Amino acid sequence: MTDNAAHADQRNGDTPPGEGGGREPALAERDRAVLAVERRSWPGPGAKERAIREQLGISPVRYYQLLNALLDDPLALAHDPVTVNRLRRVRDEKRTRR
Image (cartoon, rainbow, N blue to C red; front, side, top):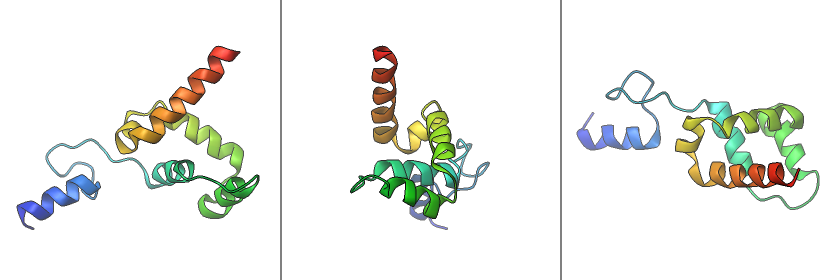
């Protein structure tokens, strides 16, 4: 593998944990999928919940439990800082209103 190809793999997160010069472990596939669902916009009520069941194979309740845990995970922040920071702001605003 060339040096350029190795660097491209590292940027894409394709390097397995423990390889690639001591990189941190990558975010799990399911966790990346949860963030991808949350990143999308949804046309109407029920569409997101239906996609959660069909694409992830979990209930919406479990989805939101996983999502809430991801907001405190540094790997999730590194993987998708825009989405994680947006959701942290929303969560913090809801907490201050209570």
